[in-house]
Image 1: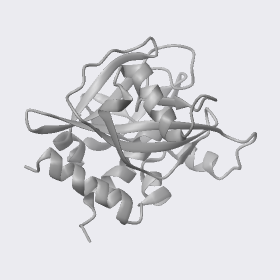
Image 2: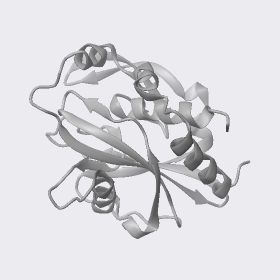
Image 3: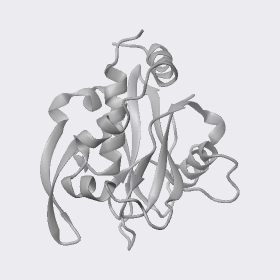
Image 4: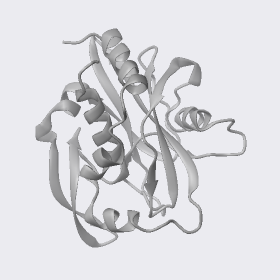
Length: 211
């Protein structure tokens, strides 16, 4: 079993010294409808946003943090996602956006997060967001405090994330319409759409040998 410190070092090295797998990796988990949407130029210009893909250690095991969004009237209601959101005027950078949104949504202070790098930005047609996924580690095991945008926090073991058996295809209901999608089954939740596309790039990056 790899230690958290070694995992962090290798992940940081790959993020900053290897070519990112990019859109090709992301598209492996894109629904057919998303592939059609991505061929169109977004009008108006997309809104900038950022999310945080973060890991922490508990009892010598490594975990990934995701959230289940609250049921509301938003486009991504009830979906599994990473903490994050729209860039605001107060954010000096998109990294600040990811850190601020993470604190607001699940209560982790920016000082307890070390950003290692970022993945390829991803356009999300339904909400017209251009998302930058930042990748980081937590300096200590977190205590989650969620706001009203978050129904629950998912703590996904790295071993579960890396298990190829958890990459499946499933028919889900989206606004009363059935949609057949590639997805990940993590902690008994279906992860699809933009979140699964980001995970696909992350997993391909993790599988790269150290140069």
